[in-house]
Image (tube, rainbow, N blue to C red; front, side, top):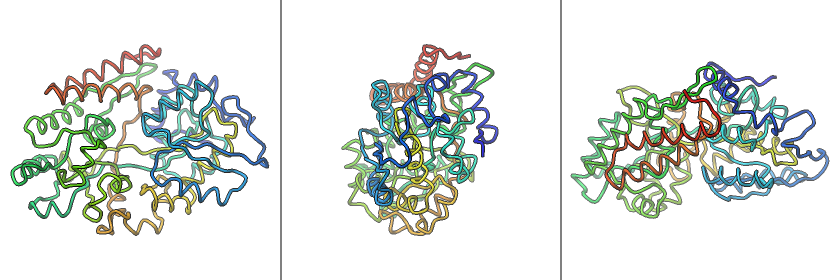
Length: 445
């Protein structure tokens, strides 16, 4: 089976990547050729015992890797957790420049185009011809560019609303159906419990804000011919920014960054009553707020228009093989097993609370039970399954997402502390992104 971009959006993304020259570096040094090489590194013969290095930040992923190692004595995987998210991407680029990158790495979907353009991740098409048949078109488009496969999808991460059931009952709150409801409940919390907040605004992690913009209909990157258009300060994103600016300015929500020590404490002690997060949140809550097990529930994200099921995404990742790997075939074999083998996916659900990207994985028996941190919500994964089909990403991600995301933390961080304009922060993100793309040689109209 030849791997082609699926659907209109996948085709547009592939055309954009080709027209903009995004894959030039990969054409020069990328892997996946019939000679069994990735980035010029010869693969070992299949009968040789190999050890693969794997960079991944998932909690408890070591238990999943142990399952592989127990069944594959000739292909052992050595796990390392040097960083997470954008920090891991930066480390991958640095390691690649030094020619000592890992064999395998977890990469969030939005970061993959940049890693492809820099020649960091390998084309693994020839080793994933059966693997890709186990995904739907919408999921595959995140890892297939110009008809080539650059990663095996791990999970999908629709944005959802996580809330403390005990505190909602204590303060007489209703789960908000719309963003108007959300704003009203935020004010109610402040009036009934002046030391508490419904939630916080996170200026430190752009992923959640990006998901909120996607829900509103934003499209930050598009192409026409061989030219890119960048529209980070588009009308939907301005609407989202203006909404949250209003909540911040009136003191209805907290301003401390998520995953900070202060935020962890407030999540644990009940100062914060909810968290807008990806479907992966249960895996993190145990470390963030250990005293709150069994007190959370999940619901769909509030809608801009009542009844609209649309949501965005926060994260979602693929398992990639790097062009530094001397064993790309074996690395691709592990990536495929990790994300499509029923036993492996079941273990990931148990240990990491992923919502599987593989089509069959979404019907595994393990999903009939809730995550360990949510014993009070037996229909947890059923709720995620309802929401996932309406989750939208951007039709394509730009080639310099790291710059865009840095612009978010800089611009929104300053605006949050100084009382400045969130819309102005968007303008700064726009300027920084366009300037960097032009510096890299892209045509931006």
